[in-house]
Image 1 (cartoon, rainbow, N blue to C red):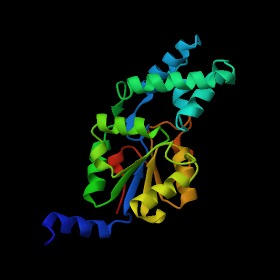
Image 2 (image 1 turned 90 degrees about the vertical axis):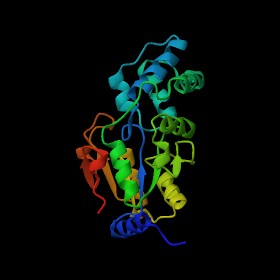
Image 3 (image 1 turned 180 degrees about the vertical axis):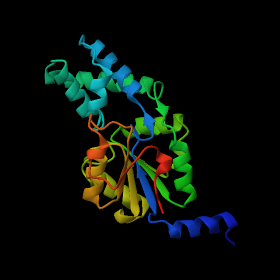
Image 4 (image 1 turned 60 degrees about the vertical axis):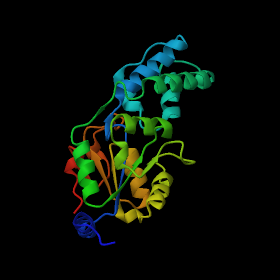
Length: 231
């Protein structure tokens, strides 16, 4: 079967690109999920009779997985670590209930994903969020069709900033790390990318533990996902 004109154009454009794939973070990079975290976490704390936490605390704490978030929150409100198992179970329960309801896709994300896809790049979503929650959120926000691979914080033995998830995701995509562009919002993404041998750019608007991403070792900082340079 002869290739179509569009397929030939995509092949030519892909050959001209520096990259074969893009591996993109979810929370703080594609979707603003701070509202979901706030509702679910405070509902879990209320179940245990513990005080609420403010959005500013959550924004600086998210990004290293649900377990880390709950552990740090319990410490922040002065609760003993023995409460972790119950608190984590209640948090998971509430997050499943609210997942995506208080979240929105950042400006430029859809346009950026279309552009990357049109240039022939294979796309993967790699997040520290549990895989099931990530897939539901991608589907709710009409982002799922862009991705051939979606890996979460429970997909591997270790989470970002460890490089293992990136290396395994590159294997799943069938690309060399040097040809896989990582797009994220925090030092976790940058550290993982550097250790895995992937180029990395960070969005300016995400969740970087209260620190400006301009202070992070990365290849570029962009204002919107559709501003990423792939040529």
